[in-house]
Image 1 (cartoon, one colour):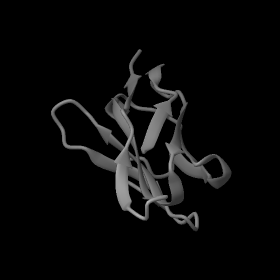
Image 2 (image 1 turned 135 degrees about the horizontal axis):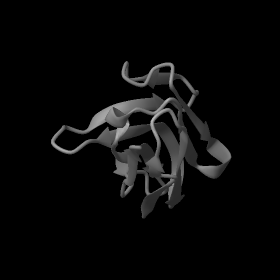
Image 3 (image 1 turned 120 degrees about the vertical axis):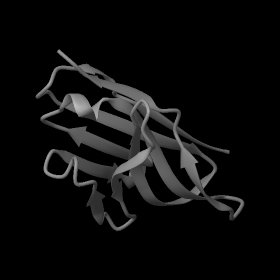
Image 4 (image 1 turned 180 degrees about the horizontal axis):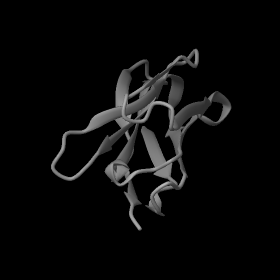
Length: 120
C-alpha cells in the first residue's frame, strides 16, 4: 500500500518559521500533484499550497508570499516552508498526494497530520 508521513510541526512564536516535510512510501509507480492542506478548529479543511509533477505551484491567498512548497521526486517527498507565521496559521497540516500505485490504481492519499501552533 501507500503511506504518507508528515513531520516538522510544533510550537512557533508569531513571526517565526517552520518547515514541514512529507514522505510517501509503499508500492508507488508515479506521484502526480502533491499538496498541503490545513484544518483549524471549527473550520473546514483548506488547501494551503500544491505542486504539480512539473513543479507548477499554487498557493492560497492567505499564505502567498510567506510560504514555499517544493518537492524532491527522488525521495517521493514534498516540503512546505512557512515564514512570518501568524496565530491564524495554527492548524493541523495534512499532506496530500495523487499517486499511481504499482497495481495501476490511482488515488488521493492523505497523511496523518501534524500540528502547527503559532503562539507566544
